[in-house]
Length: 315
View (cartoon, rainbow, N blue to C red):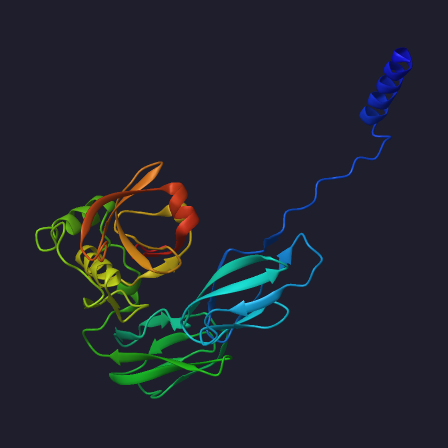
């Protein structure tokens, strides 16, 4: 009998090795298709629970910010944060949703006659562009502004979300020319940016109280002003780059000294001081309600928690 069992064991092992006996594959894990999402007012995104056939019951903890229907379609209502929950049986799965307002890359700019500047809308699809004073500036269907004569004008972008976004434009003799807008001569090196920021440390010492009550009007464009951590970051950015225009990107591998990184579900700004292979050294405002210099953030954390980078280095 023992010999028969031995033969059977060997026979079964051979068949398993040859793939002739079916082996049930492990079940796919049950999970939400996203743990966090960033969407813009007027847009929507689809969430779903994978790995299970049962239908989920969907809910939002802040319907005024983001609403969700019975199929997991999330619609952005207004700027803010909301947690979307899918309940399947006794288990729940969540996605943290951040809702932002669409925005233009600049809301105020001064140009010289003949200069050109291109506006871009983030967060919605452009329906049309227009200028309130074509004698001062005209704008193309792609947002390219051409300064025609001295004066002021409002360039308006109508978006498909039903809202309008404006850039206030001034054309005069002291404005930026087309050449100056693209000039690299005034762009600091990373070392110079670092030195300019560190030169402000005596005025912004370690531990100085810094809360969301602080406000700073930024010269980089994209945002008119910032509060709290953004106020500190914008002030340091201007110290290093003056009036150079900012641009946004998500290439976290290309971070440079002087760049601003938005982190943690769009809740915190840090200023990059130094960059190394594995980590980034930063300064920040509103860090436990105060200013802090020298925190080190790993590259892996930036990749996981980073939302975007604001840089004032030209492409």
